[in-house]
Length: 360
Ligand code: ADP
Ligand code: MG
Image 1 (cartoon, rainbow, N blue to C red):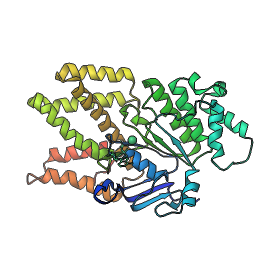
Image 2: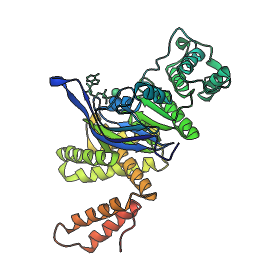
Image 3: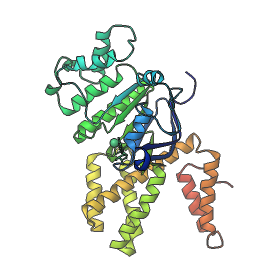
Image 4: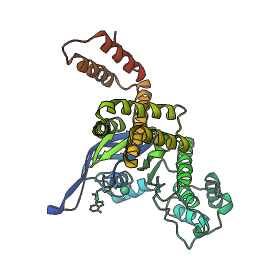
C-alpha cells in the first residue's frame, strides 16, 4: 500500500432516477479519510448520508467525480474490482441483520465465507473476534437470546472478522438505548484505534460525536465541516433567542456556550452534565424544551467545532486558511473604518484560543 488515504472522495455527485425523474442527491462532495481516522457523518434525515456511505462501500457508483477506495477508483470500475474492494470493508448496519436461525458464531462464520480465507484457524478467528467484542461466553447462543446491545456487538464482530481496512457504520446506535449505544461506539473506536482502521460512522445522535476525529455534516447533499454547520445554526439560535428576549439574546448564547465549555472540560459530557445544562438553560431562558435542546446541542457542537479547529491548527490548519482566518477577523474590525486597540486585543484572544499564531 502507498501513503494514499484509504478513502478519497473528490467532487462526487450522485443522482437517483432517470429522465424526468432524475434527482440529484449529492453535490460535489469531497474529503479524504486517513487510516485510523474516525469520521462521523451527521445531517438531517434524507440529506444523503446512506447514499454517500454506499458509494464508499462500492455498493453503488457515482455518476460524477472520483471515489477512490484503497487505491482503487470505483467510478466505472469493473464488477470484479468492486467485489475485491467490498471484501476489504466491514459494514455495520442500524439493525444488526443477524440470521435468527444461526448461532452468533455461525453468523460470524457466514461473513468469512464470503470473504477470502486469510488462512489460519477459522474457529479460533471467530472465537477471538467474539471475545474482543465481549461475546466470548455467548458464541453458541442464538440472536434471540441476546440483548439489543449484544446483537449489535455481534454485528461488529461480523464486520471485523476479516480484518477490514475500512469500517462503514450506518446509524449503528439507532435501535439501542443510551448506554448500549455509548458502549457500541466506544467499542468501534477502540477497535479502530488498535487496528488502524478508517471508520466512517453515520449518526444523528449528538451524544456520540466526541468519538470522532473529524465531524462532517451533510445538508441537502452538500458537505460541510462541523464549523460551517455550527456557524449557520448559531445565527438561527441567536434569532430564536432574540425573539424571546432581545436584550439578553447574546448573553444567553454566550452563557450556553460557557456551560458547554465547562461540561467538555474533561473531554466527556456525562448524562448528568447534560441534564444539569438543560435545567439551567430552561430556568434562565424560559424556553420550550425543544428550544432548550436545540441551544444545548448547538453549544455542544460549537465546543466540538472549536476544539477540532484547534486540533487541526496543531498539525497545520494550513497556511492559507490561517491567513484567511486572521484576515477575516481584521476585515470585520476594519469595517467601521479603523481598527481599535480593543479590536486588536480581541483578535489576539481569538487567535490564541484557536491556537493560531497572531501575525506581528
Ligand atoms: P439519509 O441516509 O441521510 O437519510 P439517504 O441517502 O437515504 O439519506 O437519501 C437521500 C435522498 O435520496 C432522500 O431524498 C431519499 O428519498 C432519496 N433516495 C434514497 N434512496 C433512493 C432510491 N433508491 N431511489 C430514489 N431516491 C432515493
Ligand atoms: Mg440513512
